[in-house]
Length: 370
Image (cartoon, rainbow, N blue to C red; front, side, top):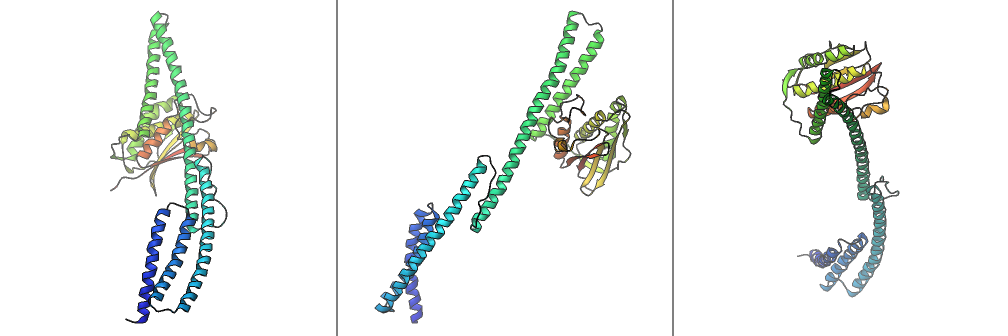
């Protein structure tokens, strides 16, 4: 075996001993400051060099003079290495503390503000992730505030809408009971109308609760969109005649879709009722259905005069009724929320935009496969 190989083996054995001892020291320090870990690593590196040198000297490959020279060089290297490790450790710890304080701010409800100044690639990546998490938390808080506001509005409106017919029912029942009703048959008809209204409101609440709970059971079947829209127009025609609104549904393609016909009829019915009630007399409500790149788009256009731009994002929220100037006192603001829930359950989406003289509600659905 050559002399170079022997020197390498002795150096390796000495360095290995130093490495094992260093690992034993690092093990209990793994949860301590990074400064201590860096100091141990620098010490192990120098100690490994020294141990290898001593092993080579013990094997008589170095003279005492050469050993003294190498030891002196290693000692100076140890001083520089330890100083560098301590400085680097303190710098990393300082950057970590700044990041920790910044992270605490968005945990308390504020926004994450990444610390300034240079940092390591790992800490920079962590800072980026924290910033993204802070943005998502802010969006979540805003959605929660919006939902809570919608819930409060819904409770207030439902309470009002229930109180009014219940008060009327009580008054009419007392009049019939006391025998002071001038026209009992008219009272009975009015009671029936109010009961049907309350029943519809309870049905809407039950439907919305199933949508929010994710328990809306769909029974999809292949059906022509032309037939689906035709049935919805026929069902809305009496209401349109009552409000003297013209229904137009000529631009409807016979596109096959796979949907739950009952639920989708409710979607179209809600959109048509909403459009008819908000369109002035002698106005027009138009329905179109055509293929698009994303599937099939069904649109309902009315003559409501348009929706304020700041209210457009809230149109499909639970309880939304719009401004008092354009919304008659009807319903509890659940119809459009039900529309969105049913459409999303069909893997579709709903949008609304203003058009000249009114607004257009669009429902995008996937087309049926061949």
